[in-house]
Length: 168
Image (cartoon, rainbow, N blue to C red; front, side, top):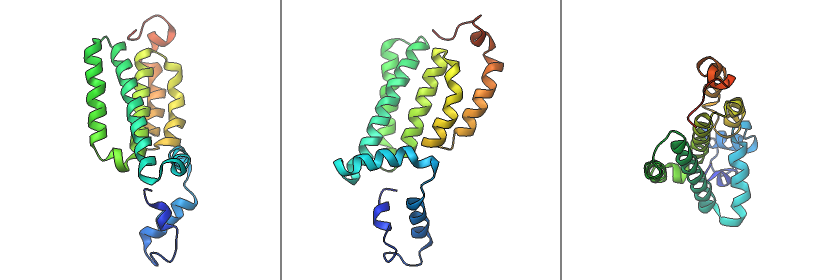
């Protein structure tokens, strides 16, 4: 997707199956790519191609680290330990290839961190909404989110019924 606009010219790579696949993806991105492509298209005229992708990755990783920090505090970690966990997460994710070409993964990581925060906060009513959120941002874990939403009442019935408490 990084250079998708250059592949749009059918005369550029005639008869190449990969270029045909990318052209079809550009013409009909599907529901799983809507969020990323919308952000990408909004930032593209303002920042240019490389900076649009890096901006999406940076803010996704920053927000993920924010939610990891607060989830760590909910799990009774000390503030300095929670800060180190979120800092190590941000450094690791920004140092991998996700910063340059993995914007889908960074949006998926953001949803993973948000789901961790929701679970640690005991806001279990929000968990079923993660399946469609995953589907429109990073579709691979959508099925796992559905299984989690179905299994949560079995394993956390005391917290859900109000007789027990989550990490808070």
